[in-house]
Amino acid sequence: MTGTGKSALEAELAVEATTDVTANVEAPPSRWRQIATTPIFITLAFLLFLIVVFSLMAPGKFGTASNLSQLAQNVAILTVVSVGTTFVIATAGIDLSIPSGIILGEVFAAQALGHIPVAGGGMAIDIAATDTTAFLILAALAASLAGGLIIGATNGFLVAYMRIPPMLATLGTLGAGLGVGLLLQKGVNVATYALNPVATGHLIPGLSNLVLIAFLVVVVGYIGMHMSVFGRHTLAVGSNEEAARRVGLMVRRHLLKVYIIGGVASGFGGFLSLAYFSTTSVGGHTTDNLQAITAVALGGTSLFGGVAVVLGTLIGVWIPAVLQNGFIIVGVNPYWQLIAVGVVLVIAVWIDQLRRRGQNRR
Amino acid sequence: MTGSDPAPTLSQSGPGPSTAVPSLEARSIVKSFGTVRALRGASFEAYPGEVTALVGDNGAGKSTLIKVLSGVYPQDSGEIVVDGKTVTMGNPRDAAAMGIETVYQDLALVPDLDAAANVFLGRELRRLRVLHDQTEMRKQTAARFKELGVGLVQDLRVPVASFSGGQRQSVAIARAAMWARHVIIMDEPTAALGVIQTKKVLELIEAIRDRGLAVVLISHNLPEVMQVSDRIEVMRLGARVARFRRGEADVERLIASISGAYANEVTA
Image (cartoon, rainbow over all chains, first blue to last red; front, side, top):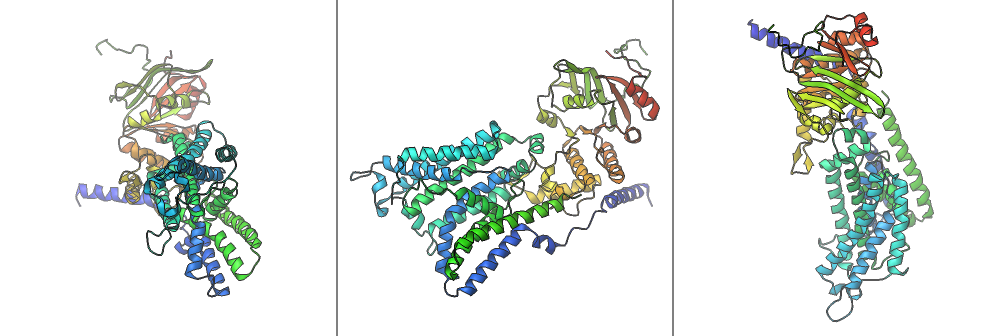
């Protein structure tokens, strides 16, 4: 045996030895157990269970393509908004101002259309759906996004730079935003058909544009949260803000961006709402924030930050909708839906808590 | 001896300085917080391939000195010298850019992210500019952990929250080792650990030292300090009072230095 061969061998052994010393950790739980106790698995199983049960109880009614596609349209706007708020909640924040983001989105778009004259006299807001143009749609979209941006940037500034707790900051912008919407509309809703093609058209045959848009938002949200550096930093800020700061992340600027995402998603939701319902709704949307937070929490995103599941949010949007729709179809008083969603929400959060406690036990 | 000794104020009854250029050096650092003078002319040297322990009682100024050396606090006066060059540090990023990494006492890991995400946090490898390259980051992390003998690679996908304290400390140290080119500063890395975990961390420190980095170790555990350190510097009342090479000091002499009963260095 040569000297170099021996020392190489010794080095190899040394590496082995140190590796072994530190490798005496508990065996990880089996892969199946891990998957089966993942919150998203539980909620997905629950959703599928509901769909199967309602399909069996109301054959030919619940499980039909038309009912399911109607459901998909019903939840589309909430989906868009909830994907945005998933980012906010991932930072251990909360956004109660979603309704004002939506309403400013609607009102700003309506105001923009109300100030753009069209050929043949009158304003764009009064034209028929068939007379609309890409320019008008884009102008309304820009106005909606600007409305959401104002709410989101205000939230972000208050939370990140003025250190106001998110719940209070967004409670403030909730009220203030609703007030601005009411002032701009003088308390009266306005109807417009100019944006209808956005929601009711079919770019892909058989798939409503509204559903297509919601699907695209989920895809973008998924990439943004789970595949991008931005999403990773979002989770880091939510999990341990101080650690994020010490590795040099610009924590405050990042929080500002996250709240802007939440606000812009709400503004976009307002744009879709105006397109779908053909009217503003300055007195409406009041529980959209709670519905979005419910969806996010049901989906396995932790309200304590650091853990987010964008596809879970999609499931979380569907569970209350399926319950409501299913109860109506099978003849159960739909008020039961409120109770069922409440119970499911608490159980989902409880399971998440158990999992985290188990994780941090050592 | 030519009689032109440039540092007549230094008592040489202690260790002579190493022949190498210090990787990190503090010269007569003064730092006050209001009326409190936390550092009154503190000096310190850490050499490549050595573990330098910084010991002293609570309030001796160790943590303040470390924070000055890692860019957290600016000094009021005095110089920080990296590889023989005087530098200015405005924030921790400056220190990181000079190859100096600090492992803080309270870990500073992100519990919900996995080990690789923590190791690369803020310096993610990217694809298409905005996406992170998870596979490559995990691969490099696994390789580096293996190199350092950190054996927790059983699953790089689980969040570090599920790791034991020793494993988490290993991740924090491995992260520092991965990015530090010159100096790793560790503030009480074993303070919260059990016996076995402490042993692993000390082995890790030695492995990093053997790779040629300068390791600065702050610890209150004197037997541990004597076991792992090549040099020991003792601080008292905001300045260095004694220096020892490996084997020169026993626990009693260290305690005497810490308490002020012994000094081998003339302080300003």
